[in-house]
Length: 478
Ligand code: TXE
Image (cartoon, rainbow, N blue to C red):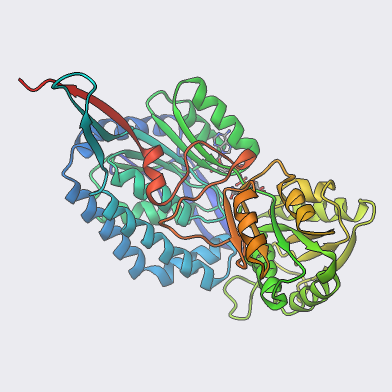
């Protein structure tokens, strides 16, 4: 029987299903998941609206208890859920388990935040008048999520949404409904009141209907820039609140004085781990001339140690890509790169098994590229990276910033001067020194700048900017 949508606390069948297949082996069906009809989406939104007054005024201890219970369940189920994640999305088992554990950390962190919603009281410029500013939930929030972190992204949106007293309509990616369903099951089983958390599965039609609904006060979106721009315009046009996280074309700068082993690890991790399917992946390796030869040689040698294979095989380091469209996109960009004047393929790995049943694509490294090439301007979202040679730090910084995106950026150097200058002048929202461009903490603001993001940041205390707004009060005590 297909897995169902959660609407107003009731598991609800649909008329159509998503057949969810394992990208490591397309003959393996992960499950069938009900697609929400338009009427069911409207019912879910109405249920969230009806549940809002009760939930937003519930004593915070109830919210704390629910979020902690969800965290405990995620921790308890981290192994089977991590495996299911790997089977559904294609990232390796260890990364799947780590992602479920990280999801639990978001719930635990925001359980505490439910007690720290805050606000302030202060003096008025008028005699005897008192001022108070309280943070309140914004209302029903719609969460539209991508496939690449199919439980962590829903977790980092759901946990603050519920902690601050909002009710939720959640749409997972059509490519990863199993993880969306798992989260809904756990939130429901942990005792969320009916309508507080609703699951509606399906493709862009579902997200579009949510974005257009006047009963949804705010949409939190993570996904492609193309869809994100449409969602931002739609929600803004009806006066709703919107935040969006939209990917990147992130640079990793390697200076002459870098620790070469560490720089290579940062590049391999940032460019190729999780098959390059991270919005914080470093696809542009901006390298100064003095270290270029050594760095390229060491990186190519390290790449040859990466085993490509099924997500659940213990030897696999690079799993498959999510689907055929992404596989085609990766292949096309490699052809685009080959045709660019001057670019050369420095390394190209292939899976060493015949007749693969899944969507396998080995890491590719281009050398001798320039920052104006298409492969360095457009997000590929696969294990494809380019080396861009530069003369010195100043040119490296200029190249790093010369992109329409601005999510993350990194620098490998032993120079405090350049490290500090980079943290100050890089135009990305997240910046690293001697660390991969991917990998973030859950209690620290996360989000991009320029074309990578729109609206308030996520994670940590920053989350209250989207999930709450303020009520100002003026009082004359009589
Ligand atoms: O994203 P989409 P996809 C990028 C990456 C990748 C590309 C495609 O470049 O190759 O996006 O991935 C829903 N109104 N990133 O197809 O299409 C959709 O159902 C409302 C970067 O997954 O943007 C899904 O739930 N919603 C990214 C969500 O939007 C709509 C992570 C994202 O889908 C909609 C993933 C519509 N009109 C992909 N159309 C990152 N920033 O990390 C689709 N959706």
